[in-house]
Length: 84
Image (spheres, rainbow, N blue to C red):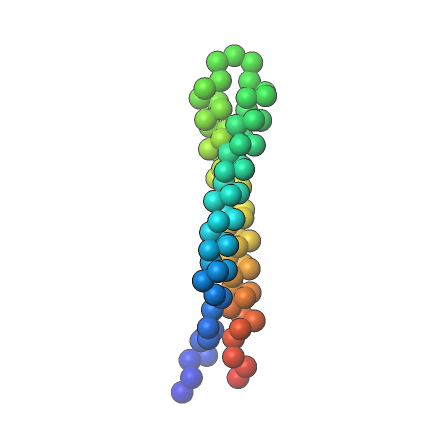
């Protein structure tokens, strides 16, 4: 008897590599934007504020792109699922 939850072959290795690289790139870009925003709005000593801004920007951007990447990989696995 077949497993009803078998998705068959998943996305290729290239899709996973692209998804990983896009999450890392989004984190770096988000860190740059967070750092830039916090340094533009800070008026005095801003070392801690810039670090927190960069960290928050990196986390928000990478989590957002990570969600989209997981959804895209799941959709690719569903497209390749064998018909029953």
